[in-house]
Structure formats: C-alpha cells, structure tokens
Image (cartoon, rainbow, N blue to C red):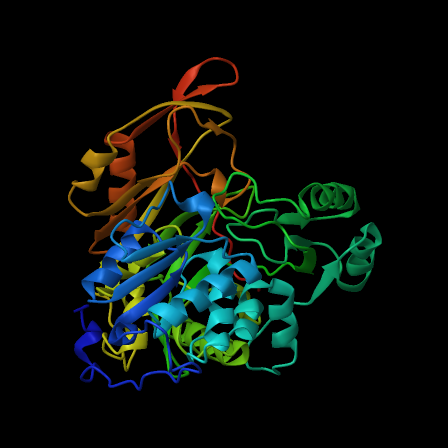
Length: 464
C-alpha cells in the first residue's frame, strides 16, 4: 500500500463504483475484468507497479517501443500503433470482447489521447478524448483558458501557419514571444523570437520541423502544427497534483532552473523555495486551471511562470512530470504518483484530503555534452546504490551521437537525490555526477572529454 501522505487527511480506502460498461455480454469474458487495467503504452516499471497492486495487466505497446520496454511482467502484451485510431480501437474492442477491463491508463505522452478515446468509447469515466486533446494541444489549451475568465491566468496565443503570421503577432503583441509546436514536449522545437532579425530563423525552424517525427526522441509521433504565444517573464515552477472526482490536490511544487540559452530544464528542486503566499497562489491557479481543462481524476504536471501578474500557465500534461519528477515527489513527500494513477480507478489507494507536508527535499541534476559520439559510460549502477540517491538514469549508450543542448532531449542523463534541504539535495546530486558517473564523449575535433554537469542560467526573477 502506498504511503498515506501527511497523516492529516487520509481516510480509509474509498469504495469506488465500477464503471458502467456498454457491452456487459462478452464472449469469453471473465470476472477478471474487474481487476484488469488496459495500459496504452507502458514501461517495465509501470507494469511492475500495476502487478504489485494485484491488477491483471494488458499492455498495448507501440511496435517501436517493444525492444526498449517489452513489459514481460504483463499478463498480455499486444503490439499496436496506438497513435493510429483505427488500430487502437480494433485492438481495444478485441480485448473488451475477450477479457474486458475496468480502466484505461496511459502515462506516456503519445498514449494520452488514445486512452481518452477508449475511456469515451467504453464509458469508463476516466479523462476523455476532448480533455486529453486540450492538454496535448497547447493552442487549444490557450483558447480554453481565454474563455474561462479569471480562473487561470494565460498568455495571448495564435496559430502559426504562414510566414506573415509572425509579423502580425509581433505587431499586435510586440517582441519577444515564443514559437512552439502545438503538440510538442521536452522543449522540442521551442524558439524565442526576440526581434525582426530572428523572425526568419523561427520560420526556417517551423518549415523544417512541421509534419516530421520528433528527432532525437523515442516518442512515436510527429510535430503537428506550430503556434505563437507571449513570452512570460519570471522564474519557472511546476505544480504536481492528483485529482479525485474533480477535487484537485496539490502534492508539491517543483522549482525548475533552465539553461541559459534554451528552454531545457537543467535542474529541479522539491519542494520549491517559495513563501506561503506564493505557494497559495500556485495552488489556486492550478486548481482553476484544471477545472477549466476538465480534468477530474488522475495526475497532472502543470508548469507556471511567476510573473508580475501572478502565476501564468506555460503548459500542462494529464500525467506526472518527466525528468525524474515522480522520484522527487517520492523523495520529498513519500507519494508515488505512478502507483496512484494505476490504483485510483480501482479504489486501491487512499484519497488524499489535504496537501501533504514535505518530509525532506529532493533534487535532480543533469549531464550534458558538446557535439560528438559517446565512447563509454561507467558508474551508473554504483551511483544507484550511493546514499541519498533516488535514481540514476542515462539516456544514451556507447556509439550514440550527441549534440549541444537545444532542448531537453539533448540531455544525456540525470541523478536524483533526497536530503534534508533542497540545497543539500542539489549538492549531493552534483557529487554523485562528479565522482561516480562518467560519460566519455569524443568530440567533433577528435578529442575525448567527459560529459559535464548542466549549469543553469541566471535565475529569472518575476518582472517588477
């Protein structure tokens, strides 16, 4: 059983009614359906946690992900391109007619809309397709917030379909502003337009990336349209939350430090070092935002900038955050959002009544490199057994080509640690990266160099 957070408001395990099913008569169906979760995309870790909850697990795994995550502990694994609506629906109907399932869950970005589609199709009561699309489509999110009144602060935004759109947006809102994919993640394809001299470069990037698969990632989807939005000045944070029947609980706030010359995250600290008033502002903005988006159940990772007008949403996802943020939540609060996402539809985890109190702090630091080829990686297993280490993850292997950081996908790996304070956790992560892990990269000049700890740029302060 997951830790009962905060010890201030954890009631007994809730009795949740089983979702209604449109096809109660199944050929070959069984009572196993009441304990069956259908995962749209999964990692081996996710499957293990679902099995630990006692669930019968069926995985629809993208063919491109099978080698990376074979999900061997699952009861059934089906190779399905879940970004193809027809293929997804066909596979799900076959499972429904044989085994059945009570809940559909996805914690991977390209599977979220598919999970929403299946929730609607089988009347399961989870997040539906319309809400899932609002989270995935950043322009749709902006439009939704624009009609939500003052429930959640937002930034002006517009679609980017032709070169002249950039000039028109600049005329209306001025420089600087941001160009980004409507469906991107990990700061991929995000570009700052600081003046007329950078407008042409922005359009060149849009022309090169639009309609093509996201490069240097394992995400099985393509960039589908671009947009423009006002640049929001101020330090960046994210609200990690879980929603229970439409009641949004702030689990914790992550303090994020970005690269000096890109939007890539170079460190995370939890809990964020904010005063009570700022924390309350983020909590209220998060709740209003999730209400406007139509989220009722499950995790969310909502990124904010703290600006002169208060917290402004940058983007959000109806899943927990990447970059080991779930491990930070575990380290600081003793809560596993992944287990909650899997167990909540079955009533296997307790509802959290109040925001939990931090038990300590946690932090993440990343490794980066200049352009070249990875020669060797050592010390990862040793790092995982070091005191205070929550996880050590490397995303490259010997022989991989790497480059200077343009987005979060260009980072090489990370170490997440827990300690009494955020500063101590950051120092501990740096020590492990410096003393235990070594990634050797042969640069384009033929010289072999170790990867280095990513150094964030100067901390941006809220505009005054």
